Length: 376
Image (cartoon, rainbow, N blue to C red; front, side, top):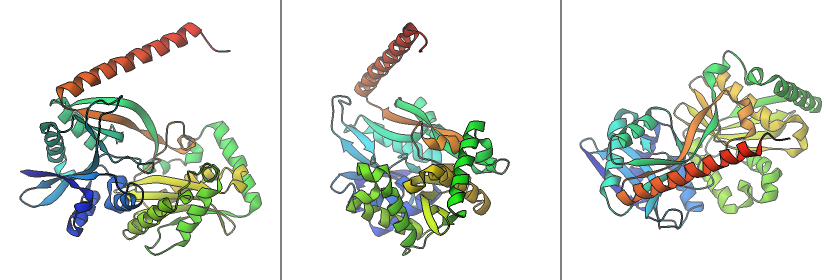
């Protein structure tokens, strides 16, 4: 038997937050963006005032938390005309799938989706960034196929990822195309002309400020600083980032990959560790060294360092968008989707219409391309 609860996030007790942290460590699909070490600093600084809810499933006999997800209620809009739930959505959230205990995967999925489809306040739940492969995705797909829950994928794409086991046979540089290798080697020689090039992994202590300060400085030097989208552009965002890093550092779940020329850090990647997956959160690099392509080299050196020094890590999830430069220095990809799961009859009818419109637009676009003929 299971107990399903939907409560305001702000009402959770310290004990419930500890159970939530323990669930994150047992999750069938690792997701640091649903971990309390990430969510609580985020909700204090970035989403303060939003009515976020903690949707949870507990095993009734053992009182073990076996599933959880942060959601918020959304009013009808022109494009989504029925009340629905949305998983936690912020500019810093790159995966919003629920945490489900790997030992209770089927039970957790069934309890979550049955509880949602049996209530009448909302007609569906929307996720912006979910994996569409792997045991958890398959369990969700299996439940939805056998129930009255329909799934509409608004968008599907592949997200760059690197399998660490594959690096043991060939480096990322060796896997790149001939032209890419030539370009990267030219950039490397330029970097070496500026000084000795090295790389280091930094798993900071909770109170350690140096790698955090270095990262924030580098991220703000480039176009993000100019555009005002760097973390350092907002005091609230800086407070969130520092607190998030401090919390993850307490359990050795945050890692900075620093690329150096001489003693100078010229690029830094901030990465979050969950289960056997390292998630690329943010990257900053010094534009003074742009001729050396420090962003690419920071990613290449990070992957090799993980391969050499952290054998328990199996995958690096880039958290990048389609077309990102990271694709050129990754071994493969994960299939991703933005999806809405609906259970009411009205929502399913509207989703059917939406799907038909999308199909028509795609068909017309392809027809227009064919009629135009080959480009010049």
